[in-house]
Image (cartoon, rainbow, N blue to C red; front, top):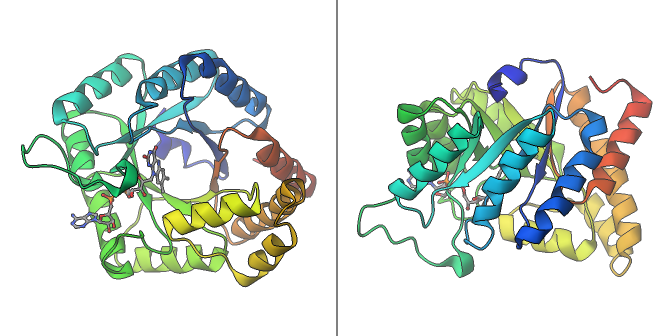
Length: 291
Ligand SMILES: Cc1cc2nc3c(=O)[nH]c(=O)nc-3n(C[C@H](O)[C@H](O)[C@H](O)COP(=O)(O)OP(=O)(O)OC[C@H]3O[C@@H](n4cnc5c(N)ncnc54)[C@H](O)[C@@H]3O)c2cc1C
């Protein structure tokens, strides 16, 4: 089923996993996926290692998850470092494995290497990959967006216009980068609607797992740590268990706040650690029925 059709449900949740570095790790990730099946995700997704080392396991995990569990699986695909021919080969295999949805991304080369397009063989931006998908294939198409702007963007205004270009080129829905202040998300959605982005925008939520981890992630993706969260992180600087418990409470409030404001879909960055997400959903289930 296409994700844009799934998103017509009143409330959806989705979980994102990443592939292992070795083939022997596939079963461990499948076990994590299985451990969250009781929360009835509306879809799950499997990331694609733009850097290269885990690429082949993305496809294997995506197709195995789709075959083994009764859940829609969205494949992430990055165009950086791939020729169009290579992308087509992957897309044809995904199509043959009944994968119906792709989130089309640019990706990042390791160590900020420059993208070399001198031989004209690849795509420079996610919007180019989206045009290609839209022209040739029948996948449901997702794309990334950035409530606080992409770190390389010339400006927030440029970045949101490129998000619009992705939609104009065929993206059916957008999923946001992580953020920790819901107001940043609401402001982004207001601006997106004002410039004519009318597709669903799903907030991406990453529960804090440790103070170090969240500082590193936010630095890399250019997201802000709001003062109230910064105070909490400082308390649990060398206490990962405490930070994780605080992260569950923080994300529970964040998701509740999004729901209360009428947001219907939530995408959890699970990072292959099911504990926090299951605790958050247990907390929320105490408040009201999930679906
Ligand atoms: C929901 C989500 C899932 C992700 N999954 C993965 C994954 O599986 N694997 C992975 O490696 N990474 C993943 N990422 C990270 C993503 O690859 C990086 O954020 C990457 O730096 C940008 O990808 P993009 O698709 O947003 O790129 P683009 O949309 O191409 O944007 C990249 C930069 O170029 C600018 N830009 C865009 N179009 C143009 C244009 N036409 N002209 C000039 N400038 C332009 C933008 O403002 C931005 O600064 C994910 C991110 C999100 C939010």
